[in-house]
Image (tube, rainbow, N blue to C red; front, side, top):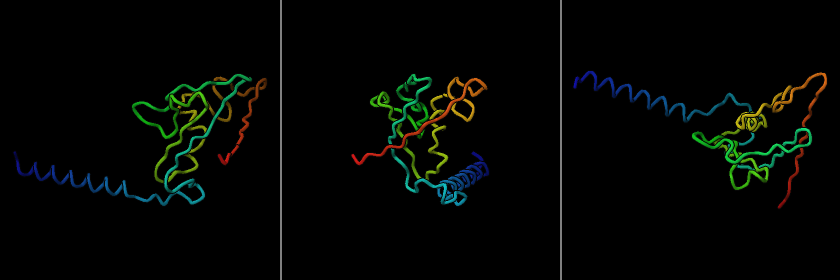
Length: 137
């Protein structure tokens, strides 16, 4: 094997390793304190129930689980109880915890003009009601 090729390969490998260490250890100072929800990750199991025209939209098990484990997902043991798992590590921002992210992972439309197949129009308008109920239990 050619010595130049061996040294070039070693050099490229060292550059890649240094770059990876730099990127992984980088503290993102571009995030403002007001946008940070947690600096040490988040593990939370909120309940979410979606009703459209009075009909509950059922979750399926393992939304967001598969080849890629999404930060928001459901599990087979509690999705029927409307539990959404939020499991995030490191710095967690408000944008990462937005409800729209779960709908995107679920594959459902959710924006200012549409939820699921229902769109705002002159004859139809939808609104969102959020209940924030905490229990000491």
